[in-house]
Length: 476
Ligand code: FAD
Ligand code: AMP
Image (cartoon, rainbow, N blue to C red; front, side, top):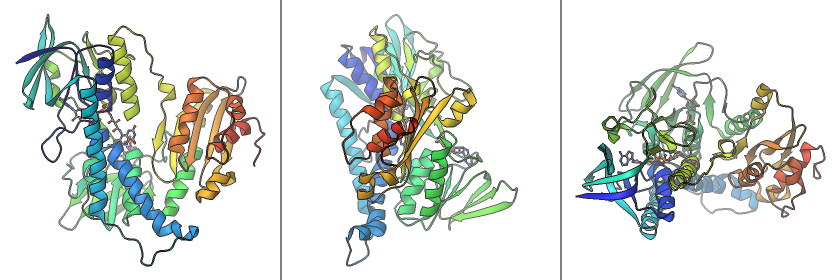
């Protein structure tokens, strides 16, 4: 059977499902195809983000943080336990699975509400005719769809180390790392990026001895280096061992565990023996099942679909968004592109500002930033002023019992325009939204400094950092 739509979206991750909803809001007849299947064989829309990414990792980060608080910090608040708190991992993982399922169901509900036709299966290009592009949906849904507009939002998957396949028992991608049935005594992590640090933190809090091997000599090179240095110091204090400049030579698995042979920056050969190894060295775009050749959809040498700034591919009417195209692999970047593409199909002229896409690492302390780092401003030669304010001097942070970190604001030396905001500390994943808003409105540091912030609140640290740009913080 053949069905005709105005827009067919392939992939229901945060890029695809949001694009489908926005297109439906704009009056188009929309179909969305997604292949992700849950344990019962049913559809599980939401992509990497919902099933094995943002959502389950944040569920486990929260659970493991509660445990760490109970073990290490509740006593400071005068809360004592008759017996030491313990982890029921089965229950913790079941809760994480419920959170994921709620999100899957939420997306199916939104599709119904917005009259998006959902097809569970793999979408592949068949060809092109006057009616538009023909796309076959294979099992479990068996359908052929046609549409003048196709949005490819097929996302990404974990990149394995060359010659070391993921078995999800000893050598784990994010999929296996979010579902370990017991806490390993010794856990190795390859890659100190966002995913490696978040997953390493979860299992360290639950009791694993964690060693992270990172190839680059610099810790978190994309972050402002003041923030990166503070993070490295705090992570080391927590017991997260991070080895920089580590060259992985060989990985061998056995019944007993995994052995990683690696070379340190001094050229010395070293071994890491661990029970399990998480490999988090980046991700590769998913284009395998698409049959892109059938229509001549262009990909670059690394497999990404080639797009312009507006997500147009080389084919008229075919768009691509999210992890399968250039740019940061972030759910909210995929969503913004999804909305923008739907609006472009409707003839509108939206704009995605890459300079105001926030970055967040949900470790403890949390790390968040938007805009330029100090090292980038130094390289560009643009004159700037810096204002920094510590959580240590904030009443709410003291009351919380979490005074780690600071907020740092970089502003243009002449105009005072905010160029970058860098945060490390409690709840900065939420605080960063104010900085994004300020930059989107091209605010000056003084604009933030003059806004009334509730007292006591962690957001006052942002205000004080803005005052510090002009050398006049009030509480420091
Ligand atoms: P995906 O979410 O990958 O969705 C693509 C969907 O398309 C999938 O369901 C896939 O099965 C389906 N698909 C692929 N090919 C086909 C086909 N031919 N037919 C039908 N369906 C197909 N980002 C953040 O912003 N914040 C975070 O906190 C965060 N945490 C993360 C934690 C982890 C452990 C990981 C791995 C990632 C995390 N990310 C986070 C990144 C985020 O998950 C991705 O950037 C985001 O999911 C990309 O969205 P997408 O829609 O492009 O693709
Ligand atoms: P991200 O890009 O945030 O997913 O992080 C991936 C991290 O893995 C980056 O910090 C990379 O430098 C790091 N990385 C990539 N390849 C290797 C490797 N072979 N060994 C160790 N670290 C690696």
